[in-house]
Every structure is written in C-alpha cells, then in structure tokens.
Image (cartoon, rainbow, N blue to C red):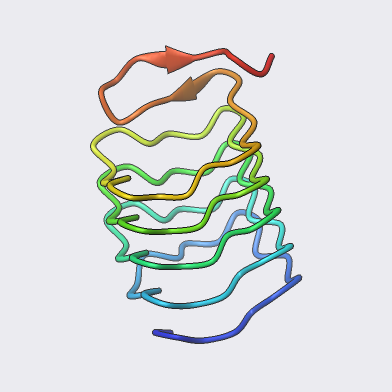
Length: 105
C-alpha cells in the first residue's frame, strides 16, 4: 500500500495495519479504523474523518493531518514528529503521551 492513492474512500472499521508510507487518503472516512502499529510516515490524511480510530504505536512521522477529525482517536505512543496538524479536531482524543485532548469539544 506504500504510495497508494485511496482518496475519498470509506474504510470505516477496517483493519489497516500495513505500510502506508507516502500513501494518499485525503478526504476519506476512516472512522473506527485500526491503524495500530502501522507505518504511516509521510501519509496524506488531509480532511479525513478518523473518529474513534486506533493509531496507537503508529509511525506518523511527517504525516499531513490538516483538517482531520481525531475525535475519540487513540494516538498512544504514535510518532507524530514533524506531522502537519493544522485545523485538527481533538475531542476525547488520547494523545501519544496518554493525556486526553478536549481542545475541540
């Protein structure tokens, strides 16, 4: 799935633990998807819905999450180094350090 283009798809509830490095998932619905332990380095997740998604332990280094909805998402131990996070919605979001972010509720 590396560098694949899946823009505007609905993969809600799917198990997506894979190498997504460089993939484009812009404008997709990924609610309740399981990205735990996935390699999501430099993935484009612009304007995606990740409500309730599990991204624990995912490598999201330099991913673009601009406009993403991370309501109730689990980011515990995710690598967000250099991630682009403009206009991201956080509500009941578990951040990499285990803290809950309710900034967008």
